[in-house]
Length: 230
Length: 284
Image (cartoon, rainbow over all chains, first blue to last red; front, side):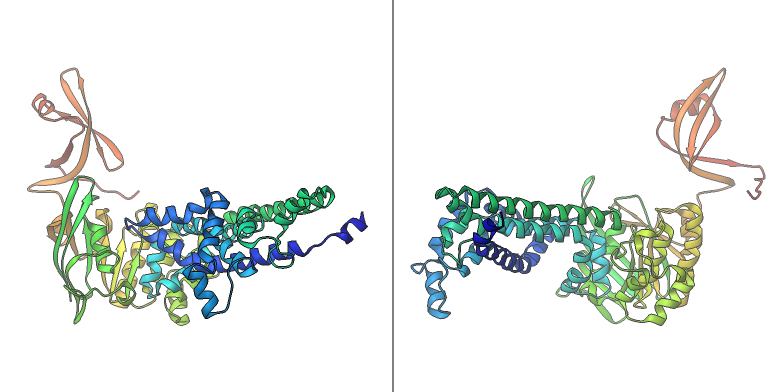
């Protein structure tokens, strides 16, 4: 049994978690203003923006992956710009994976945050404005601390979803060992070459980690809700 | 002195309505805003606070808050506002709720002392009773020493005893800080106790403006008592008719004539009065 584990490469897991961590961080920063805007606006454009952010939920990952691949390749203006100005290639490397994952996991961050902002008593926000505080200060000191379950859900689900990503990652990243070969892709390849033992171990690890992550969210949210009396 | 001349289209329950208010309030006055729900009281308060847009002008002393081209944001108006649902910051302790407005620990402590909340200052809002929460909210509103204190039905969710106690505290704070106070209220006894002036709104317009005594006392002529109530039923018993009227929280029976029985409709509002006897009053 021990030998089995010794032979296994754990690098794909490391890449998965590094990718998920970075994606979550980037999305967290982008999504707070976006979710705040969506929760506060009465604009006619709101359904448009909501549909756009929810699109990755319904699109086949291959469609999303294909467009991202086309948009980021060296032949596109975006890809060419990054290559010329920063000397960075955006496809078939880790940077490209992060960009693609950020698109793919966007709704998992935006939607819980928007729900959280919407659940906050509007009068509480107004009381903060009347106390002379800016919108930014109100979000940081009043809104976010009063929606911890939504925050927790957004962060963890985004992280877990990025770890579980397969289609987009394969299309945009390929499967370069040590660079873009994440755990889900590694399992796919093991099955392809009929290395079922390794596939079993990898899959079992994924199941256990995902379950523990979700369990921690639900336990935390249950406790928080009791504390603030929801 | 506060000069208000504002206009706003509202979409109420009965279609569109114009809120159109011209009003001057003297410094240090305590004004009550009364009127049926949907008459625009809360909206007027929110416009004063800068939480809602309107056209027109608002001027406080020599400061302009609203005119054609300019609208001072809520953040800069230095208003104290007490919401009906308290709107405390649930993530902060009682003391931190006050300090969030203004970092003046001495003022915060003295306000909490005045409202008997000093012992609760480290507690979180969700562990407090309704009356305690509203007192915290009141203290928080006073933290930036507002020129204008706006109260939106602050006591309507509280039981009568707690109301009386808090009315006293509102009055104390109003006097202590010399603020101009505008309060939305439905409760005549509360208005009578607190306000020097009552403004009645109906469908967005001022329909009555004067002292609480002139506006709220319903008796006329030689009437000793007069109450408004709702006619619930008319029952014929032998040769007389008995009307059952709901006044406040109580039901009363009144004998009425056949003519009266025909002219009244069940469900309508009625005024119930009596004269020519000496009312008795005793403590309960």
